[in-house]
Image (cartoon, rainbow, N blue to C red; front, side, top):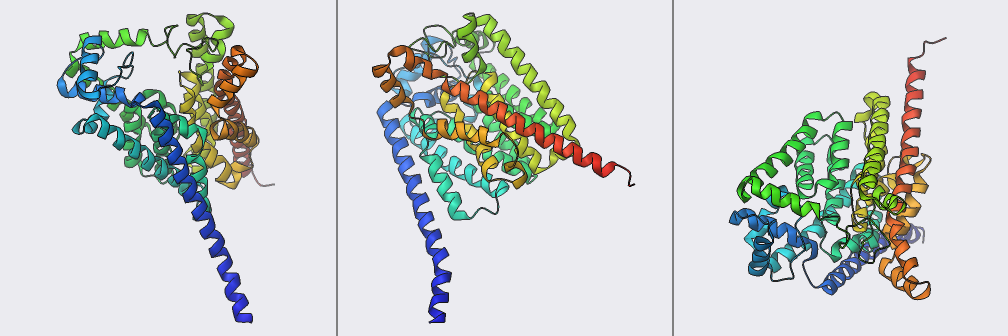
Length: 435
């Protein structure tokens, strides 16, 4: 009897762990199914098309920023309605060149699978590096919950690079804390070339950890790839065409315009989306955005200086991660689907080192994010409010990602300041002469 009961006791944790494994795997599959269904509903390549257009333009040696060439590439290779502009510089096309080996439909499928694989790997590596004591079955469950989240679904819906960048950010920080700098550099270079607006946490963490050569090399790669790309596309004429495309990026009739009251405006996460409705002046909202960004950058530099030699410790990387990702989303225009990058600091803050989890502000960081990028049904809310309270109420909800990102920024800065202050006080006590 004793032997049987002992066997049962030893089997229970295994059975429980297996159930959690199954639940986590099921959530991952459900999440992937939902993402695929949402993407099928869109029915086009969405935001993967610009990557393919740029890469094809490099192969052909033509300027994709002129409407004629743009439409010619679309008609010959993509066979979908052309996008209204290409807003990525040539570096994006350089890292996307391997996709030109395949037909567009095949390349879209590979892109979808690549996003899945890198997101899975990056989330796992984040927990492996910052929460090594977290049992593996719980890691699978956490990944499953993230795959079912709103934030990930939004990115997959239009084949945005945000889920891929989320996975690569997790992998990047894991390599940094393990001091595998070459791998971190390669990942950082891919992300920065793919979408420069994601650069802040990659460059910021490299600088924080005193990897100045890495940060300089990341910028150098981006500059070199763009220079080579523009040269291949026609030189200065391609540069001028690109600048014309960028000039219409925030045109009032397009979805990037920072006025939530316009039906065509898509929700954004940046300060300007909160500032413009007050100022109703695009130039002044840009200036205020720059001032706020400069203040935030200077404050983070001050905290890094106060941190001293501890900046190279994994806990310092964890403490700075939240503010840097939030800053990336606030300083330049990002749409709501880019907020998925906040899953990486969210994991670190909730499941990482005990010292980080106990910092003030962590729950204020976590709760709004879990609500928004976790469960917020943006289209359901918009449609329901539109019916019950009118279009104005639904449009006002577009401010949600910017408000949530701002709250996360403030909360993570509060946590960072306490981390830095506690470390400085501890260091001062150690250096004080013994009585």
